Each structure stands twice: as structure tokens, then as C-alpha cells.
Image 1: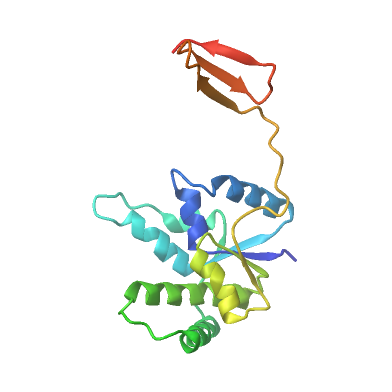
Image 2 (image 1 turned 45 degrees about the horizontal axis):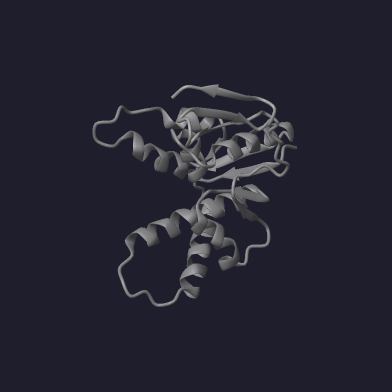
Length: 191
């Protein structure tokens, strides 16, 4: 049986982002999960959260469901998932200190976090991947023992042996020097 793995919305937002500081790690993680024959899951809530960007005024609508389903199986909210999410949210509220303001955004995030955690637990996923630091802290906050909440990084990162090029402008000549990681291969280029 394939190992079930859960991706929350933030991972899909990073996959679709034009500039992402997590793109390289996510790409390597996807390769690793494919080699391990893992099965990736996410919640229907991910489709809602990702689709908000598609429906902003002036944007063309996209088939975000189709794009997400290329990477993951999309799971609906069941009675068990809803009740587990409610239990997780109640645990967070019980531990919360009195808030001085009306933090609607934090309340919404807490609900979505609880639904993602509950869905992953219901599916028996040992790992939930996210780039959301608040969601990562929920693991300790809730005392979860059946699931780890991790940043999307491969367990065994590959080594990059390609020579990266960097350039430096000589202060004396004003000529741009392109240096490779291989110290023997320097080339000069006029600015």
C-alpha cells in the first residue's frame, strides 16, 4: 500500500508561484515521494483557498481543481473530519490566552489549520507538509503524536555539482569577471 502524505494549501501556492523560495525543495521532495511510491493527499479546502487568487477582480478563472489533482488526491470534508477539526479547534481555544483584539484572520487560519490536520489524521498520513510556520507550531500546541508537521524538504537532498556562475566587477578595470565554482575557469566579459 502506498504511504499517504498530506500537502496543505501553502505547498500548492508555492508550486504555482512565479517566485518561490521553496520551489527547489518541493521539486526534490516530489521526486523523492514519487520514488517511494507515496500517495499525496489534500483537502477540498485547498481548492477553495488556492482558487481565491483565480477569482480576484480582473483575473481569468483557472481550473485549480484540475491542477491540484495532478499532484494530489483531493478529499472532501466528512462528518469524522469535521468533528476531529472541531476537537482540534476546541483544544487550541482551551489553551489560548485571552486575546485583546478581534482577530478574525487568526480565527479563520485556526479553523483551516484544524481541518487540514484532521484530514491528514483521518487519512493516516504520518506527515503533513506545509510552508506555514503557524501550522507547523500546531504540532506542539496540540501535542500530536500520530503526525509530524514539516516544511516541504526532501529527506535526502541531492547534491548539486553544477558549476554556479557568479560575477564580480573589477574595481580597477570596470570589467565584469564571471567566476565559476571551478576556480580554473574564469572568463572576462566587457561591461
